[in-house]
Structure formats: C-alpha cells, structure tokens
Image 1 (cartoon, rainbow, N blue to C red):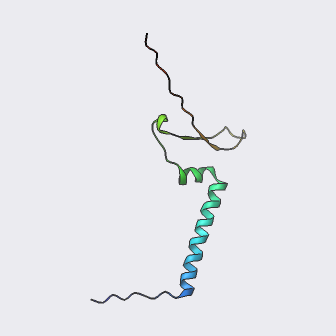
Image 2 (cartoon, rainbow, N blue to C red):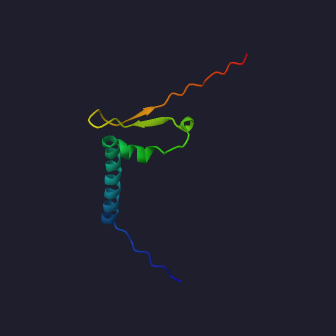
Image 3 (tube, helix red, strand yellow):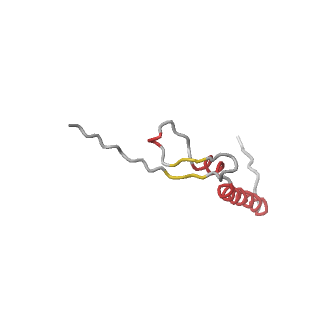
Length: 81
C-alpha cells in the first residue's frame, strides 16, 4: 500500500510559521490585557484554599480593576497544655 504525502514548499511553510507566530504573539498580548484570559491560561481552580497559591480579586463595579494576588497562608500553631 502506497501513501501519498503532499510536499510542502517554502511558501506554505512560511505561511504556517507566520500563523503560529501570530497566535503566539496574540496569546502573550491577551494575557497582558485580560486578567480573565490570564487566569484561564495560567491557573486552575481548586476546591481547597490550602491548595491554592494565588487568588483572583474581583472588586465591585466602578471600584477598581481585577487582579491576581499571591496567597500567603500562615500555619496555625496548636499549643496543648
């Protein structure tokens, strides 16, 4: 059985490369422009607060902008007497 594979010339390869570069640049720009997109691409949701290392803060309307902040969780010390 013979498989026929189409040949790709340099023009087709440059078109594909240009498309990949433009998608990469747009992804970088969208992560800088949109906090929601950045959270979608870089972070995942967790059910336990102790498993989280960052948090997205969404303020009330007209009170500021969204922001991703790191969480600093302190361990509670249990003293038994």
